[in-house]
Length: 142
Image 1 (cartoon, one colour):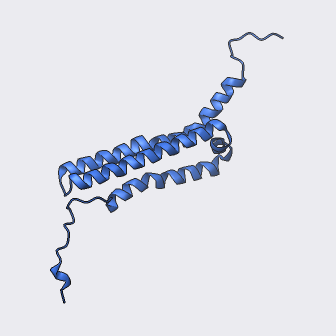
Image 2 (cartoon, one colour; image 1 turned 45 degrees about the horizontal axis):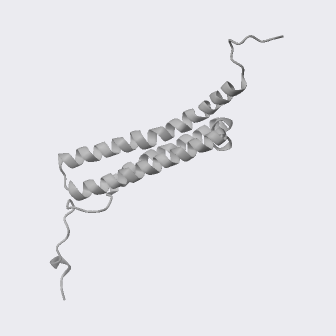
């Protein structure tokens, strides 16, 4: 009967094709902060945030934001898989690649989503105001 010690355990830092736990945390943390942001804004200013789901432009903003988040997440995971496979091990190159991927995920994927949640309804209100009110410098006839 073979012992369990006879098998050679794979190296913890060898090439692999899966996302590590720390990479999964980096993927999830910005999304974890985005949810409370939406919740707090919905509690404090329900009419403001509801423009994102009531107005057609707001719906397009939400769909675009979801597409950007999904694309950013896919690119981050694909980059992590490549780094884990080809720059495996505790090296400075792997660390810098991971840091660059995390920064790109936050800047390209998560910050635009937060921007749309916070500023999107204001942009919709500005657009509505520009389309309905006459220009201020135009003379009015009594």
